[in-house]
Image (cartoon, rainbow, N blue to C red; front, side, top):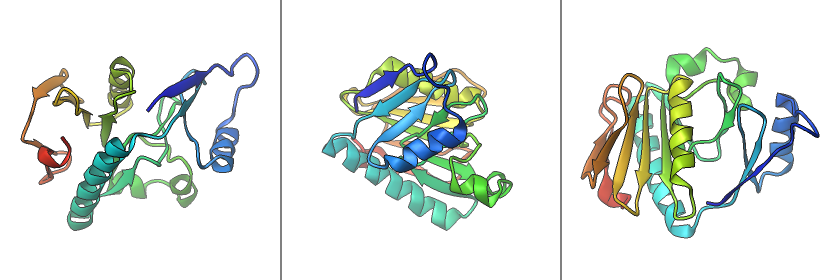
Amino acid sequence: MTALTIQLNSVIDLTDEQFYSLCQANREVRFERTTIGELIIMSPTGSETGNRNGRFNQRLFNWSDQDASGIAFDSSTGFKLPNGADRSPDAAWVKLDRWNALSQDQQQRFAPICPDFVVELLSPSDNLATLQAKMQEYLDNGARLGWLINRQTRQVEIYRADRSVNVVDNPESLSGEDVLFGFILQMAEIW
């Protein structure tokens, strides 16, 4: 997925409502917004990456439905992070009590919450350093666990709130640890 970053601050400072309206008026375009107001326009992923992302989301949603301790989200979901950025991970999960603490209006828009768990699946056109910074941003805003999956190198960078990044080479499976207790992802479906 190739991303285009546009500097708007010198022309307009989009309010949260204007950004939300822009996204709703252009549903075929995936937008994010950085903490300093840069507008990021992301192109669709390639078919293979989209399939793998769909597989991951399928597994996460199935587990979330059975576990019932939280809510799973796909890549079309925007979150308003505490630092002011609007981000859309490839997959996310929020603990149910945190989700239920939001008003219905907040839940219907870009929820003002950082997911407990996030996943970014590196596509061939992504910039690794950009996604690594995005993963760190999630941690800095309250995420407890994150996976940056690099299919090309068969590596997974595991981000945890209380530790440094752990890079795992060609894992057979990944564990949701104490965040997604009991969730195991078999990587053969993703590679």
